[in-house]
Image (cartoon, rainbow, N blue to C red):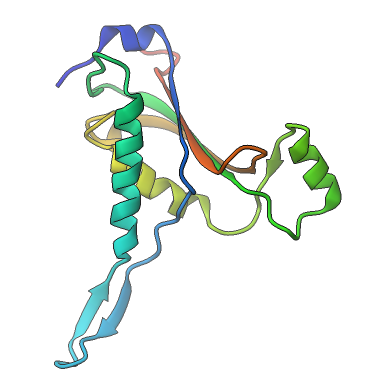
Length: 156
């Protein structure tokens, strides 16, 4: 694993046409037979992360190597407009203006599964991320996740 030098000559951006999904907290419950406490996780999250990885691999630039240096990551989560949006917001979306989503799911719960899916495939470890910028918007396009990666401004 190493650094593709040509990567740092440009930013890397890719769009994943997938409905953004949040990672839910692990639930604790009792086993039906034993009565012992057990942790339950969302199995569909694994399929979601697998789909993210597959979509990345389909778009991965030829010769791309996993990055093992500090990086900046921006993630935009784009959702379909909801029916209860104000008409002015719907108009803005239809005219390609940015309308931020201020309802659930929370950004931290959206971000974690994306970073977990891409870890080891774009960057060696998410500890290599020095700046993380995330946002939720409504889109005129299909729901998607836009990921952009760049080098830090003072990277030598």
